[in-house]
Amino acid sequence: MQIPLLRLVVVATLATACWGSSATRTESTGADHTKVELAASHNEVQTLRRRLKETEDERDGLTQRLDAIQARLKEAEAVATPPPTPTPPRRFGPDPAKTFSVPLGKWPRRGPADAKVTMVVASEYACPYCEKARGTLDDLMNKYGKDLRIVFKQLVVHPRQATASALAVCAAQRQNKFDKLDPLLWEKGFKARSFDTDTPAPDGTLQECWTQPAGCPIVLGLATEAGLDVSRFKTDMQRCEAELKDTQKELQQLGVSATPGFFINGRFMSGAQPIENFATLIDEELAKANDRIKKGARKARYYQEWVIERGEKTAVP
Image 1 (spheres, one colour):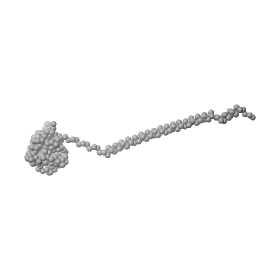
Image 2: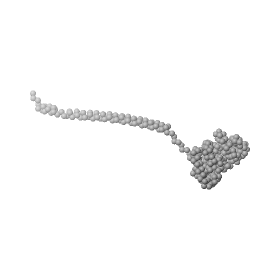
Image 3: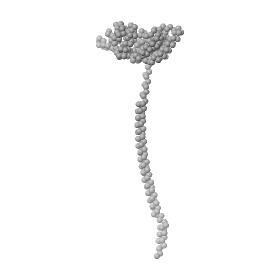
Image 4: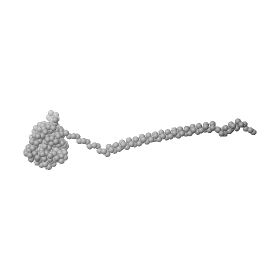
C-alpha cells in the first residue's frame, strides 16, 4: 500500500526537528537550577547571620571578661602599692640663714656666761617634742662643754596645760633651783599628764590657780619636793606672769609659733632634730666665734656684741 507523500513529509519533519518540546524542558531545568541557587544562598545568609551573632556574643563575653580582669588587676595594684607618704606640713619660722637678736632675760640657763655659743630654747612643759629633745641637749652639753650655754625660755602653746609649769620654772630660777624642779616637771608632771588648770575661787568661779591664795597644788607639791621656799615660790609665780607674757611677745615677734624652737647664736632651728643637725650649726658658729675672738672680739661679751647688738630685731613684717 502506498503512503501519501504529505504524511511522509510530516513524519520526516517530526523525526528530524522536535525542537519545540526540547526548548521547554531546557527552560524548566534553568528555573529549577536558579531556585536551588537561591535556596543555597538563603541558607548561606542564615548561616553567616548565625555565625555573626555568635561572634558578637563571643565578643561581648570577651569584653566582659576583660573588664573583670582589669578591675581585679586594679584592686591588686591598689593593695600592692603602698599609699604615698604624706608630705609633712611646712613649719614656718625665722629664716635660718639670718642671725636674730634674742634676749636672754632671767630665764634658766646651763653652761658658762662666756660660752662662745649660746643656744636659746623655746619650749613648754606640755610639748612631747620638747621632752624628746631633752636627751639631745644633754648630749650637746657633754660634747661642747664650756663652749656651749643653753638658755631655757618658755613659749606656751597649750595655755591650759602649760602655763602653771612655765610660771613655776620661772619662780624656781629665782631661787636658783631650776635644776631641781625641771626634771620633776617632766617626770611627774608631763609624763603623768598631771597639769594644774583653773581652780574654783571662793565665789565659785574658775580662776587661774596661781592668782589664788592656795596656789597651784601640783607644782606646789613638786616645788616642795625640790626643796624650794614654797611661800616665796607662790609669790614669784605671780610676779613671773609679766615676764612670761613679755617672752611670748619677743619670740612671736621673731617668728616663732611652735615648740621646740632653737636659736644658736641667733640662728634658728626648728623641731626635735638629730644631734648631728645641731652639731653642724654649732660647729659653724663656734668657728666664727674662734675667728672673731682671735681678731680681737671679747669672749665675755661675744653674744652681746655679735648676736644681741648686730642681729635682726624682728622676723615679722
